[in-house]
Length: 202
View 1: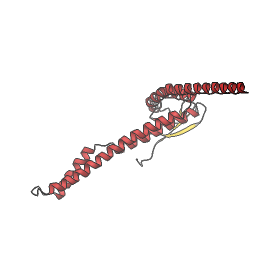
View 2 (view 1 turned 135 degrees about the horizontal axis):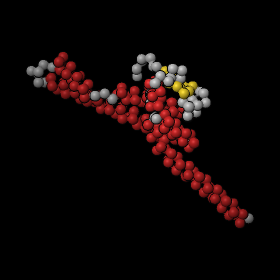
View 3 (view 1 turned 90 degrees about the vertical axis):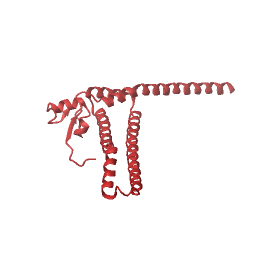
View 4 (view 1 turned 90 degrees about the horizontal axis):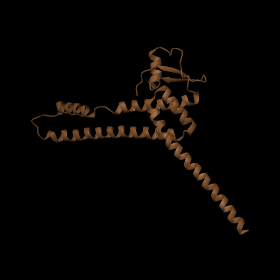
């Protein structure tokens, strides 16, 4: 990741709590981006419709996705170009075109280059899978009320990725809560039946 000093932006929740985030994190929100372009953030950007509890979760999501995108930029380069350059450099330094036996050496170098590229592609795929796993865990640990507030915040702040994620998560949460309620009712009914059965035996 870059060692360049990050520009920090202050966000103010509707109940007055402040959050300091990097500019890259703030720009995940198209609403905040518009405010910044209009120079509305000199003394902090007011997020009037979002309370501190929800804004904390919004910034957590945005930070994770910014970090993941930076990691992806680091590994997701055109490795075919890298490979061409490295092979060309090797050929120029070490290969006599009249020495046909040397092409065996180039073959080994090419194999190493291909292995390097494959590892970078695997790293990129792993990074994407890690982010999806993080998103799923982030949603799973969020209760239904918070999830609905988070969805409203994502809509107000115009954070497409978070809005899509929360919209997909709401039905899953509702189904899970329904299953939990049904299980609880079943457990109560089973307890009552057991109690009545034991009562008859007495």
